[in-house]
Image (cartoon, rainbow, N blue to C red):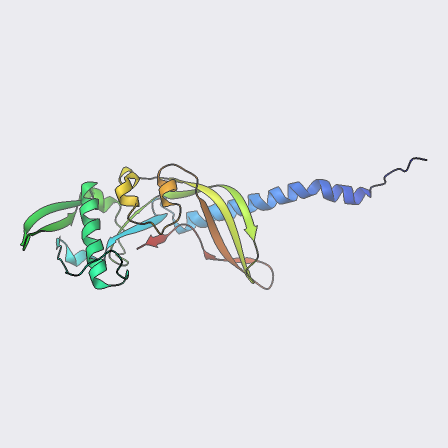
Length: 221
């Protein structure tokens, strides 16, 4: 005698709707995350700001100085390390046209250069002067949601793939983006790839979400 498998029509309907519900949920996150990025970056030119150095408006034109004792394994907050990094960044940003560079003398056998912002550099300058001279660019465009993670208590992490628009040619220079090795996805984003990003939300008692940290508007030191 054959047994017939009976499926509850209501259960079948729910099973059929599950992929649609999941898709809608992901689409809602995609829309929300894009809107959050656009609110943080309304001009579409400030997805990320890279600090060239702790040089403020009243310090231009700026002449470099040398501090003895530098070695590559120094702590990143050491004044000698910071000064050496500033000298390196100014020289590289000058090569891509964001600074002028003028030889004004020597400190012993070491050349002293004076730097000023070019018109091209001022196009990307963050006028708030937060932390010194920062160059900003880019617009985050969300491509698809990758994962929703609630493993951290009270926090939801939504991971997504994105690409970046409004990327200037100067940041595509390896010498420039290599100055910021700790900023995940920068190389892939500026070269036209699709890195993975994340938005972090606190989960309120009513289940709604409040954005804690998004992708656009980062300052990279």
